[in-house]
Image (cartoon, rainbow, N blue to C red; front, side, top):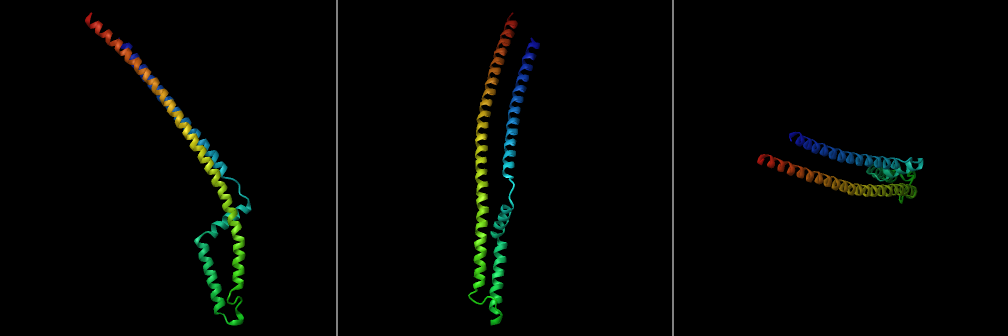
Length: 182
């Protein structure tokens, strides 16, 4: 009788251990698949930039910084100060500062399209990233549903095993009661 009880108990422990191993393997597989997707996305984002794209990124980065604004204001202030303080015949750009306006217009005319190229490329990268984010979210949703289904299946198996165990226990209790009466 005790040997039968020990076997039943060992079977239950073994079944529980098998369920935990299944669940652990499911989680590890899901994590591994997620890692593979992230590697693919990272490889796509590490594209090779042309020389022009690198320059446009650097110009856009510098042109949109406080460093650029401060340096540019200092240069303009120096330009105006020098042309205002020099004697009349030594001024290289006298007051309405036509040469300075021409240089500013040329800088703006060249800088604007370069910055637009950089922004357009960044928008394309952002679009690809949002598509990748959507795909990851979709995959996560599918994985969550799959895990819920697997958990439900494991719960059903455990419930079945529990009912079988209770039936076995009831049977053993009946046998004990009969042996005590007899």
